[in-house]
Length: 221
Figure 1: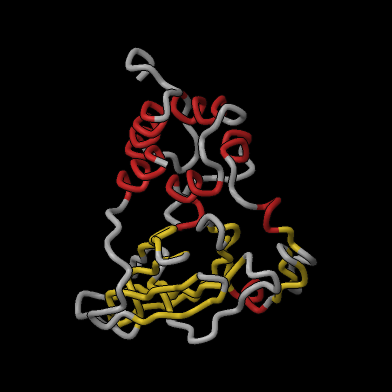
Figure 2 (figure 1 turned 180 degrees about the vertical axis):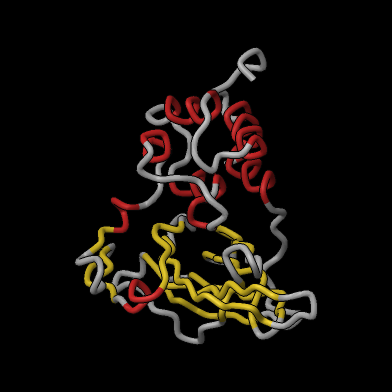
C-alpha cells in the first residue's frame, strides 16, 4: 500500500473528495463515485474515481493533449459494474482563444483499478457492453477489455507505443499492470532500452518506482 501511494505522488498529488467549488458528483453504485472538478469552459480538468469514500485514482485532463472531461449525468457502466465509459474532448486554440479543432474521445475505465483499458474515437465510442468486460462496436466485435489493457510486455514487444494519449502513458501502465515479480523483467527493459514515444523523463520516473518497490538497486539506477 505504501509503494502504491508513492507511485501516485510521483505523478499527481491527490486531495480530498468533497464535491465543492463547482465540482459535480456522479454515483455509479456499489460505493463508487465519479467526481468532476475544476471546470474550464464547460468541461473539467480533473476526474476522480472514488470507492467507499477513498480516492482510487485521479485523472488529469489537458485541453490540447488528451482533452478535458465531459460531464455525464448517467455514464454508461457495464452490467456487472466493472467498467465505465468516460468522455474527453481535445481542442486546439489559436492565439486569440478561438477554437481551431475539437476531437471527442471515450475511455473505458476499469472501476477496480482506474486503468484506462481502451481509448478510441468515432465509431468506437458508439459501442456497447455485451459482457462483464466486452465492448462491441462495428469496428471491434466483442473486444475483451481485460485482454487489450496495457501491459509492460506489450510495450516491450512493440504491440503498443507510448504517446501523449492518456491511455498510452507510463502513469496508466503502472495502474493497469503494476510492477511485480512476474513482469518486472519487462519494466527493466523499459528502463534500459529505447522505445517509440518513450521519453527520458518517463524513464527516470520508472526508475524511481522500481527502486522504491525494491526491483532496482542504487547501483542499477
